Length: 215
Image (cartoon, rainbow, N blue to C red; front, top):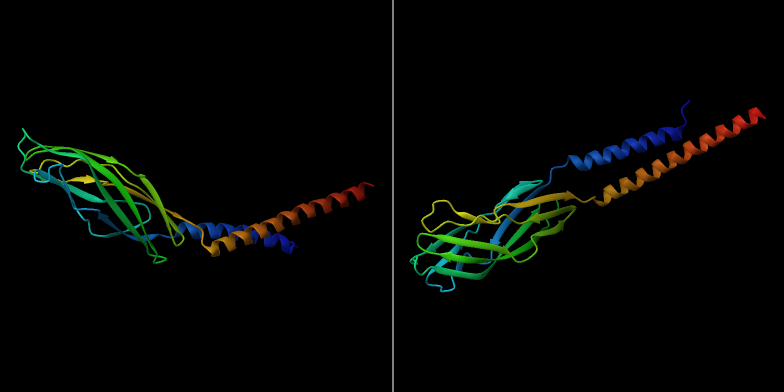
């Protein structure tokens, strides 16, 4: 007849496998909203032109996803002989994430600067990120890691298609074990340890019995 401890060891292995599968099977839902520090970035001479940042409406996602931070357009009446100039014009983009499971929210702020020239019919706009391009926030039992970028420069004021700043923010959601998961993990380790001890002790017992028989 099979020893009860052997059945306990088998149950421990099954429990560990179930706990791992359960953690991986969940879909993680979350809401997000980007907010620019300003929707209009004025040129060095404010009357010559501006860079416009859209305030995108909030959205929702599940697990890892690319999300749009803002779209960019330009406005200017400057003549090509005297273009509008932008010299390290600062901006900020704040991302707020709401974790559906816990109801908790957190905000990460990314920063950068615009430089370049702009006229009524041309645009050379460059972007530089000035702060950390990767940031993380833990909400409930989920860790959200956001990487900002890339930058797609805007066209001239006559362009039909907008450029984008931080058009693709790569959001990875890493499941952090909940307290119940830690309890299951501890139980798994305890049961597996007991099973290992039982198998070792049983092996020693068989060894002693064999030695007595040979004697």
